[in-house]
Length: 223
Image (tube, one colour):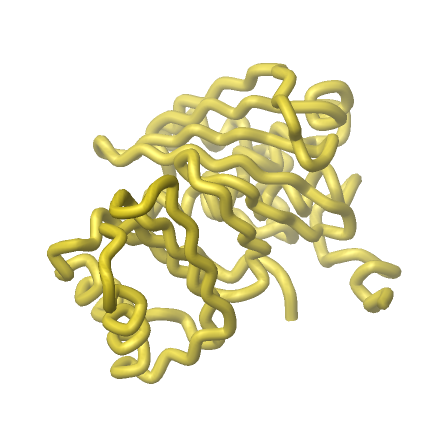
C-alpha cells in the first residue's frame, strides 16, 4: 500500500527525504535516548550515507536532530555552526557496518553528563526511518509513536507491572516488544504508546528496583 507521504514526501528542509528528513529524525531519537542535546557525538556513516551524505546534507541533518531540530526547521542548514556554539562536540566517520539493513545507515554514539547511548538506524525513504539496535539490543523503532525503551531484570510479572503503571496514567499501549540476551539476564523492552508518557510515569518505572534504566523517545514521524 502506497501512502500520500510516499508520493509527495515529508515537509522538510531539502534536498533529500532520505538523506535529510530521515537523518534528522534519527538524530532526534538518539537525542531522546539521553534526554537532551549531547555533549559529544560520534556518527558512523555507512553505505550511501558515507558516499554521498555530505553533498545531500546528511551531516547537517543528523547534527540538527541531535540539537532538537525537526526536519522542517530552517536552522538545519546552519546546524554544524550552531553545534559548535552550543558545545556539541561531534565527529563523523565513514565505516562499513556488517549486515546493515539499508545503505542509508548510521551508528550514533552520544553522551550527556555521563549518560551514554548507542543507536543503529536507517533512513528508508520518504522520511521513514527504522532503528534496529539500541545499546546492543535488537529493536524495531519507527518513531511513528511515542516510545518507551527500558532494560530490566528478566523476572516473572515484570511485563504486568510495567503495563499496569502505564494504565494507571491512562496511557494506551499500541505495541510491545520484548527481547533478552539470555534467560535470567537483562530484558530489553520497547513500548509504543498512543499518548505521550508523562514524567511521573517515567519516574514510577525508574523507581522499580529491578528496572536498570528507562528512556522516553519522542514521536518524530507519522500522522
